[in-house]
Image (cartoon, helix red, strand yellow):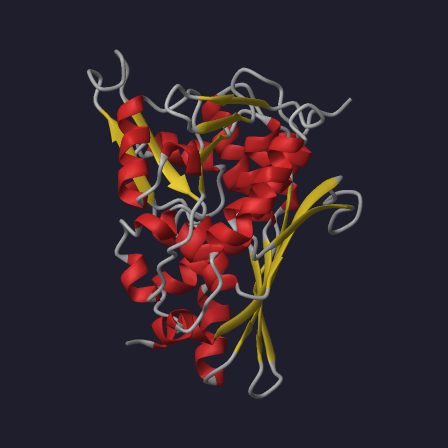
Length: 338
């Protein structure tokens, strides 16, 4: 068993149990946060956070904490970086004292869910599920490495979609999670909405954890994490909205990781982690995606990372820094001067 597995195998926190009161709070404030809550005939609760309703930034912050399995804090902050030429008015800040569990075992959008045109009522359906229910299903190889499996319901899954999933997908979720319909809540957050854009930007810490994993860093050595990124306005165009939320992290994301273990490994992590290590760095994500003919797998994986990184060692007390923000690029992409 590797070090990450050793850490998480001993971890008794249930991400679904911890998220449950946050889901109750989300539903209880549906009117205030402009959400629509429905139950299917079978009894599954579906929270629409921006498809047929306006939604809100506040809902997006709450969904961000739900995605992190109750083990993360997500809030708004004001102010910018680099003075008037580099500032942005609103930022999303994220922190976790259990970042591997919160980000990789819960928040990461790694559960592939799809339905054919026939199964989807005339339209194909695809979404990557994120949130605590992933840790019940454990359909991804990542969970073997982490050595973590949640065994507590009820459960919640977040889908970045513009329509409700068809019954065949809901049935698969219930079956793979071992849940009764009344135990499942689905939260739908299209990126074109206020809640959707906010909860995607709230993944800035998770993006760093995922790249650390891809780099082969010992996940069990990541002890604490905090991060922030600027929050752009959502666009009614799905491609533009997706581009903005990715750019917020790639060019405006700042992450501070506290780690144990070897100093050289910590220094190397700081050096390799920023998005600027990618050959695709320097242009808007929407343009990069278009130029690769909308094939995610052709994009250099090193790009999916925060812009600026600090890594601090608990062993030596040293801190390493790499990368930098490019708020000028974000302002050119996002801002129309009056």
